[in-house]
Amino acid sequence: MSMVRASGLSGYRELVGELGGDPDALLRRFRIPDGVADDPQAFLSYRSLIRLLEWSARELDCPDFGLQLSTRQDLGILGPLGVAVRNCDNLGEAMQTASRYMFVHSPAIAFTPQLLERTGRVRLVFQILLERVGQAAQVTELSVGLAARTVALLAHEIRTLAGVRFSHERVAPLRSYEAHFGAPVKFGAEQSAIELELSALTLPISDASVELRQLAEDYLQLHHEDPQTPLSTRVRMVIQRSLGTGSSSCNDVAAAFALHPRTFQRQLRAEGTTFECLKDEARAELARRYLANPELPMSQVAALLDYSEQSTLSRSCRRWFNLTPRQLRGQEPDPGPQ
Image 1 (cartoon, helix red, strand yellow):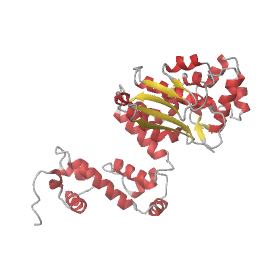
Image 2 (spheres, rainbow, N blue to C red):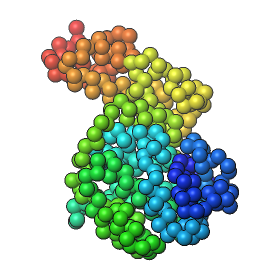
Image 3 (cartoon, one colour):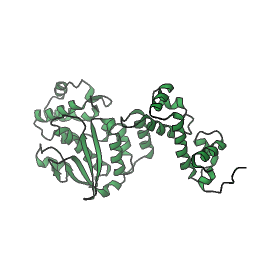
Image 4 (tube, rainbow, N blue to C red):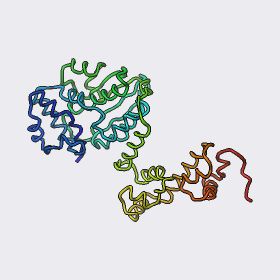
């Protein structure tokens, strides 16, 4: 069953109440347990969310229910993913990060950036990845509306939205869409998406924190497994961040994935690699990066790679690159074997 974070219902109770409805009765009708809508750590069926929003729109005679609900939500509903997106350098990176980790919010949906070279625009396409969904206009308008709102907030209300597209036909008065988006809206399109001018991708996000973004992405990579990402790829990333901390042993990294070391090694062998190979690859990549900094002493480079001796770094560089560390740095020629 494909789930979605219950934070996707943020603002639902208040909106239904303002429209004269009984939110608890509506939630019970679709078997959404008491308290779930108010628990940001809980999950509910994405199909239940689709049906709940469609029924609410009809029951409350509010055809733009999804759009109205989107105005009551922000990046906070995405949890750690929202933190990562909010602290990207620019809008383009924010879109890529949201696309990469959207499965954490719900594996039932996707947001995919598409470059439109002919028009000089970029399209952020929303998809429901479930089969036989039926009518889903309200959840689509909630998602696309929230995407547009998020872009506006990150761009500090600088006008970036060039157009909006929905694959369904119009379900609410045109004035509702015009008021919400302030941009041309097309219905019955091949995709549901927002469109931005290409120049919007480089708009900086003010007050972004590199440290907060890194912490959020580390958390996402460590605690949320993308079914498409092999264990070996995630292990390599954890090793790179662990080297130099004294916590990069096989046991340390296995513990980070909540796996027994033997189970951990067995799963890596099934992917055609070992922990030792991955650690060696991570060290080689970091060595090249560290040695590119002439201000970093060789002894410190060795320590950052968890080598107790500088001579071990020298032997490894010869094995990896057929060069000494100093040759790699370009400081002086290799004197050759002594």
